[in-house]
Image (tube, rainbow, N blue to C red; front, side, top):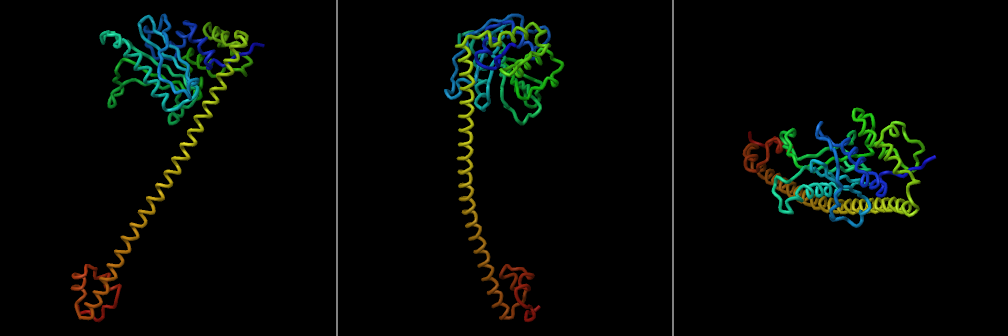
Length: 316
């Protein structure tokens, strides 16, 4: 019985999509929103650009770059887990590829469409619970149907993928099933994959027997590094959360104490002033002044004065 490696790993992902143009072309035509007649007909691999990387996350992203017969550029990234800075990285890569011709001194009309496809083995957009496919383009906020052509970023959240949600796009379903269902525990390949020439070829590439012992060791090391990075990131998150909570609690207590003292002082002053006015009102009462005149001179209402003392000696 054949055994398989997970196609999401650095080694296998590059062998499937970074060395087989026909498989990458099939995948891109399946997942990109290309209109009929504008599909990719041929590809040419490009040398990956050196972009700033966080050393703590150097194993988490695998990317493949290419251009097609229309001179459109494509960046395909496999991201093993998600943090907010990965979104910025995707935007940086897309915009950098878009403006690169101008760095060589070419005119603006040399700019070509750039597509960035980020395949994410994690939850990136938890607020969009039932959506795994996310397409971003520059758009008019008031009229989102009006977009600016230039570059697009596509995010595919693999944990949210369900074949039934895209049953009308057979090739997309097959490729995403390949990425989500094939791994070391796979015992039998679905018939529909083996019946498709592209998927059958991809499955053959990830068979364990196709790899040397050294490659298998590199494969195992990749997953060890991924788990180490995830543990590190989670540790930073927990530490930051705990520190933020403690700092927020301290600030809240300090603010609460200050507010309580201020409120107490204010209330004390108000009550003291009122007691003083009531004493003055009693003295006025003893002099035989009317309740209406006392109210006018002290600022206390007649109702308050009547509640404080008997009015039987007042002159009405």
